[in-house]
Length: 189
Image (cartoon, rainbow, N blue to C red):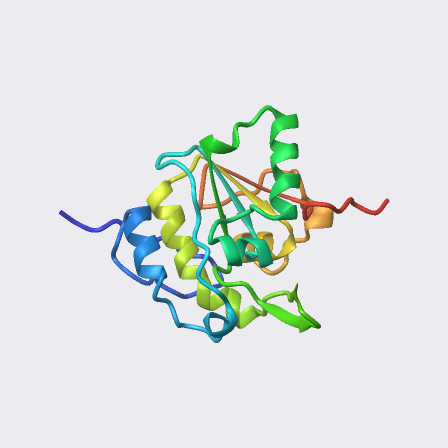
């Protein structure tokens, strides 16, 4: 039996981190990832969740503080907003696969709080093979990038969410791919 060829991001040049082809196997392997420095300050890795064979994959930037503490994607304030948006669109969250480009929470201290810090290009590139492997294992029909960081990681650095949001993007990643504005923001006129 021959292994499936990896799905490659056009700018990444990275191969998936492991020949494991199931989400369960990938989650177990990723739990030990130390490829970038983010693992040192994060509580744990936050890997994607959802049913095997989900048709829709939602991809955000990175876990936030609530997600880092819980170990599950989109359970904090952005997750609550995502739940409302999905409900309004008539999409059952339990039938989607939800993940992030970067799997560890990047933050800066502000007193006793941990505030979100946007992941850099090195962190995105280092973590991207995990996302590629998730996409290969799930083979979704629809990929939705939630915000600019996810969209640029998936569709290239020239993608502009303010210009291209809501439009189908030609992609080898899924038959249908598009991006939305980050949750909680709106486009400027």
